[in-house]
Amino acid sequence: MANRMDDVISLGVGEPDFVTPWHIREACVYALERGYTSYTSNRGLPELRQAIAEYLTGFDLHYDPERELLVTIGGSEAIDICLRAIITPGDEVLLPEPAYVSYRPCAVLAGARPVAVPTRAEDGFRLTSEQLARAVTPRTKALILCYPNNPTGAVMDGADLAAVAKVVEDHDLLVISDEIYAELTYGRRHVSIASLPGMRDRTVLVSGMSKAFAMTGWRIGYAAAPPDIMDAMLKIHQYTILCAPVMGQLAALEALRNGRAEKERMVERYDQRRRLIVQGLNDLGLRCHEPKGAFYAFPDIRSTGLSSEEFAERLLQEARVAVVPGNVFGEAGEGFVRCSYATSMDQIQRALERMERFVRSLR
Amino acid sequence: MDQQRKVAILHLLHEDSRLSPETIGAMLGEDAEDVRRVIQELERDKVILRYSAVVNWDKVETSRVTAVIDVKVTPQREVGFDAIAERIYRFPEVRSVALMSGAYDLQVVVEGGHIKEVARFVAEKLSTIEHVTSTTTHFLLKTYKADGVIFDDQEEDRRLVITP
Image (cartoon, rainbow over all chains, first blue to last red; front, side):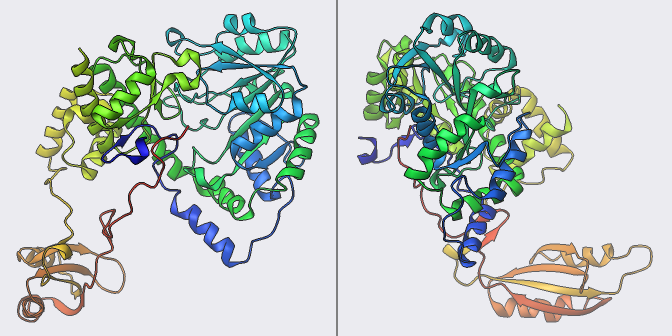
């Protein structure tokens, strides 16, 4: 619907508004000029895996680029093949919700039974060990974590993760940790659950270039996992995908080698917009917890008396602002909407003005 | 407010001088009153000299001429290049003057309504200044990017309106 309307300001987009930095695009052009058009190793270009291994040491993560890293078609492929590699039909997979929309269908396609673990605004949408422990059954196989979180912007610090890790160890679970937003944290450094004692061997880390380097359309992601799980994932990958496109891999290599300054510039911008939109939403009467990562604000719209769907639809029809209703991210998202601040400052300010008029009209 | 925050304010204003202290305050997590006070200080200390718009004049005037002139001079005792630079920048048709390293000394940008106006300025005013030893005039044909702004009309946002 939103795509067919004119003059819509979209806060509904789940990707950076920045174009991939020019030096990265230029590296791809150069690769094509030199004739890099063939398959690569199934696991991905050795230089790229080496660069990823070095990059991950910045998060206290140490992986062998020969055996424990795999370049994938975005983080999405990594999630899919990981689930397919570890799931025996009937296994349960725990999904802290609100969650990114792909985990549940991927789990179902792999033969698993997805089990929602609600997280709450009062906890800053962090996963608590109590809620997690309550959801575990003898059939539970794995937990999918996504922090910094889409859609809530929540992050988990070392202590939060340690509490979760204990439950994971006690029940001998695996963790799929989608850390695609790891670079987008504000005023704090991202902590990976795989860096906690004992967790590396039971975690599959999924990440990629999309969010940190504004490279969504390139579809280059990666997985890091202990060798036994990685071997199983590699089997699926080599028969279904063969390898990620070589030119995208070379662009990713350039991003990891020389992309730090541009990345930091983008993160600074997101941070400024984040503060502006959070203050703006609170000012217009939609209570919004502080999102500490990713590029989403997740305001509480229950004070308007509308459901998430009603709010999003009427906001679009009456004020021409597109947001995503929180319930699409799971039941726990009902009563909230996702507002992406990966859009220009100007658009954010105009969207806030329109939303203020809309919210006032409801009262 | 520390120096780093002041620089952040300057960067934001340099990009969009119409941002209000309230907006800047929200963006940087500072109090609007503090931002207002810092901006006043920066204006008073002549760190911020003027608020202006970046204009693509090619879309408005067809006859406007801009010349970039390389000027070689003999520096003077005591005052070096400064006194000559001052004699040049006092002319209102001069848009900018900068001291350069390399093949020439001063880079002078001159604007005029017609090519003859600029030619006359170079011949009659600039090259006759004492200690100016030579000038090389380049006429600007097209501006692609200036002060960080790309002048070609950029394409609109190509992303889908809603993505997960």
